[in-house]
Structures are given as structure tokens and as C-alpha cells.
Image 1: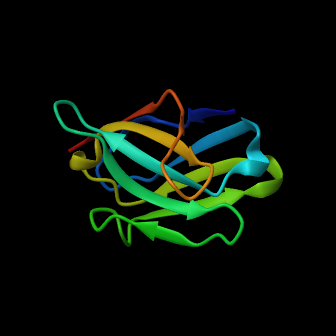
Image 2: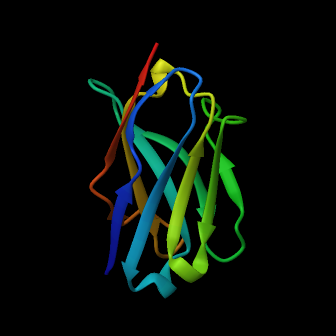
Length: 118
């Protein structure tokens, strides 16, 4: 089992930056990759990006590419989402998730709200 706890959300203005954190505990040695997802009101959950835990390879959705950066601190078992130049359409609950085997994202955090005002 892997437990995930997100933090860092809040209310910001368009153009501002925010850093979200996701602290992982439990069987963290088994993690292959970790990702960020988001869900806006009335919309389906959307993939934001992910990072492979060992190699640090990243991949981003087109909607955030060039504005968001994912990083991780293996020693602290913490995942980060650096969100720059935020737009109102980035408003959503942001979730981190862990992929233990290269298949599906099995473990999820409780989410943190990000609200971007225009």
C-alpha cells in the first residue's frame, strides 16, 4: 500500500504561480511513476502529467506543457507540481497518484483545490 497526501492548493489570480506537493508513504520503493490529475466541476478527471520515480522522465498534457513542471524528491518521497502562469481554466481539484508497476494508477490522494480567479 502507498498513502498519498497532497498540499499547497489555494486561491490565486491569473498569471500567478503555485507549487503543489504530494507526500508519499508506505511501500514507496514499489512506485514506478507518479502523476498529477485534475478534475474541474462538471468535468471528467484529466491527466496533467507524470514522472517516472527512478529516472525522472516527465510527460505532460498539451494543456499544461510549458507552464507546469513536475519534479520529485526521492529522499523525501515527495512529488511536486510547479504551476506557472495559471489560468482560470486551471481551476480544479488536483490529485496525485502512484503507479506501482507501469500499468494503472492504483493509489490516489484526497486532492487539493486550486482556484484561479481572472
